Image (cartoon, rainbow, N blue to C red; front, side, top):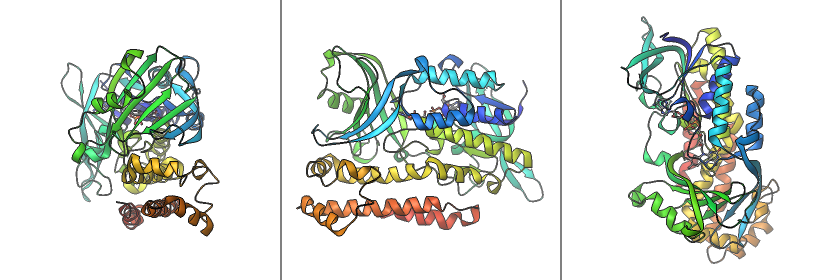
Length: 458
Ligand SMILES: Cc1cc2nc3c(=O)[nH]c(=O)nc-3n(C[C@H](O)[C@H](O)[C@H](O)COP(=O)(O)OP(=O)(O)OC[C@H]3O[C@@H](n4cnc5c(N)ncnc54)[C@H](O)[C@@H]3O)c2cc1C
């Protein structure tokens, strides 16, 4: 087998397939490696709600068709944030689709294969390979990966560039040579992701959630956890929950927490379970730096999912596209240093990175508040629907407005202080993301500033 390529893409989820299409559209020769059997690629535990705008933008960039036909289960119109009290809720416009991830993923894979991407399925990537590229300077780079095809011996694959799209596990990122790139976070700890359990159910009766994706914050789910109910067409719902399995929640069973929360809404005898599985979703802000010599990291492997809603499909597609664009640039110049690849980080932060970094702030605040206080704030209308729209709280910070909220917040005035701090930190994070360093030499200073903002909330 040929074992030298321009690009090795690890993982054939949305990030990997997108990266492979982006590379091949740029005339590069690319191999896509996935541990799954070809027919199973795209089948992933998911809420399956995707933003129309993001998926269309990514499709245009990649020159592939929008989700269509049987790939779409139903349309999404509204995101509802709610506590146990139904009446006190916030509903936000959210235009999107509920998709069949497996069918959509298979079609994107076919698009990639038709364009000439080579697929190695049922092939597990074991670790990255680092090699010296200049014997005098001892300069090193990621030079390939060790693979283990099903029922075969381990082999080595080499490339000019590796793109790690292996999902939360981040097999290349977490196995790179420690000394290769100190700016790349190369760990995976329990606090980096939430463990989830998700079911697709079919009810006996029609539900009244058509067009809605509902996040319900519940006291019995470790904060900032919620149970979600996504209307999936007809009598179907996509439901699930998740939380970080750390500290006092270390030994809690996600399944048990889910069944307990679910029983409050639907008696188990009133629905059939069509699919029930566990999965992990990233909960960190996006990697502040997602490059190392010879390596780009995209999708869940770079924590590109929205920490609040778990929306990661669209960001993964976009990140994959940008990775392919940068691959073309660096391969043309035959330069693979962090400096050469740096533009990738700038693409991420001028695209979805800033929004996701701010979403993480919201999850920290929700964790601090807990479901009880959130219920209080919604009931007293200290936080209102309009606060989260474009005319929201950020624009109406007048003294009167604050006083009015303070009165409604009594006696829990500390909550208002927390909200004010959240807004201030969120604005400061957005500003820093806009000022993402142009070159790596300013990165150390920048990252210290942004991390100190998060510390203000913890
Ligand atoms: C419970 C849950 C609900 C979610 N809900 C939503 C939602 O409603 N909307 C949304 O947009 N997003 C949602 N997400 C997030 C979304 O699924 C991910 O963000 C998205 O799939 C990330 O794409 P990816 O390509 O980075 O990773 P993945 O889709 O995880 O793909 C990674 C691929 O890499 C392969 N792989 C992994 N390790 C190796 C290895 N060592 N060797 C070879 N191959 C390997 C895997 O087989 C897989 O095919 C949800 C996630 C979970 C867990």
